Image (cartoon, rainbow, N blue to C red):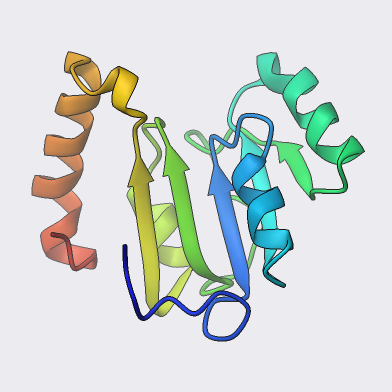
Amino acid sequence: MVPDISFGHRVRVVLDVGCGVASFGAFLLSRKVITLSIAPKDVHENQIQFALERGVPAMVAAFATRRLLYPSQAFELIHCSRCGILLIEVNRMLRAGGYFVWAAQPVYKHEESLQEQWKGMHLTYCSQFFTCC
């Protein structure tokens, strides 16, 4: 949907938060993109194990409560699927000119909590940190 994303060239290092079984990371691996897939809760250990068995770098890391151990501006794209993460931490880790992708599957489109998360992110952070559409 964003034509200037050039996977494997302009975008080579991605963080995928709320990764499930790391399908996005597996998709990008075939495009020469290194993706670290993170499940935000301990209950997702089986999904992470599945991702690791497929050869996709993945881990469980709760980062709504603490800073992740990655340097500032380490990622060219950060994808977040259905997660209420701290956007200040995302902003710290995202490279200047990088992409922030927030996704919610269509099946959850009418979930009020997701609509509230988006409104809160857009009003609170987008005007300060990101270019949102």
